Amino acid sequence: MQETRFCLRVGHLLPYCMSVSNTTVFTNPSTFILLGITGLEAAHIWISIPFFVTYAIAILGNFTILFIVKRETSLHGPPYYFLCMLAVSDEALCMCTIPKMLSIFWLNSREIDFSACITQMYFVHCFTVMESEIFVAMAFDCYVAICDPLRHSTTMTNSVVAKIGLAMVLLGGMLVLPCLLLVRQWPYCRTNIIPHSYCEHMAMVKLACNDIHISSYYGLFVTGVDVFFITMSYIQILRAIFSLPTKDTWIKTLGTCTSHLCAILAFYIPGLFSLFTHWFGQNVPLYFHILMANVYLLVPPMLNPIIYG
Image (cartoon, rainbow, N blue to C red):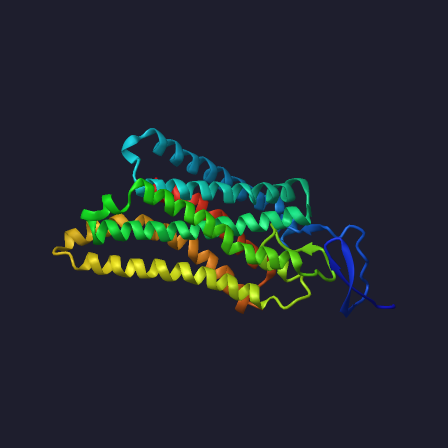
């Protein structure tokens, strides 16, 4: 069979230096196909049940937190403002991913426009970066409360919290922007099929003709910076706790940070595990990669209201 040399850029057919056999030129290359959980297509209906339950718990739980904090004036303080920011981020993260996943599982609605796919990818990673920044802010608030409690009320004022919140929104949007620009400009080869349940960044860039290592390194850098600041904050917190005079005071003070530590672990462990399996898990089944990426998006929004409840 004669080989066709081509490359797909959004809306165009461009020459590309690789030979592809048995490939049909797309009539609508601006549309991508999401496969769901590749390798477990027969179990999509069963997989959708825990997905839907998790989604319902996450939406209801985070809405409850927002409602309670708004109603209770005694909760109008920096820790609870950050908790509300976390709840909003969790709800937004769920709403920009789960409905499309459920439509794939229930209605077999796999097509997604390229622009819609890019938009979903941007907001998914924007909200995950924002959530990471919120954990950094919560760690800093916990650090000030424990290490310098007399100055906490003057340091973490409402205006300071508002500025931190605005900075997190701007930082989340700007840090993801380079990835968005790269993904929009890269040519996409051979197929418009994304073997994933949503427009995940690494799943998309693997379809590109270009070298994708820059995206991998950049994502690792962004994650690593937040992990570094959180780690440094908690090292200082633990040093302050263990310098307290009695063991009972240690336990009582450490208990104030337990919920933060649980939420941080629930967020970072699946995320880092998913990232490292992309780098080093060449023999890991594809469906496992996809499930871990979904766990990274589904489990923290469900657990956070329970942890802080």
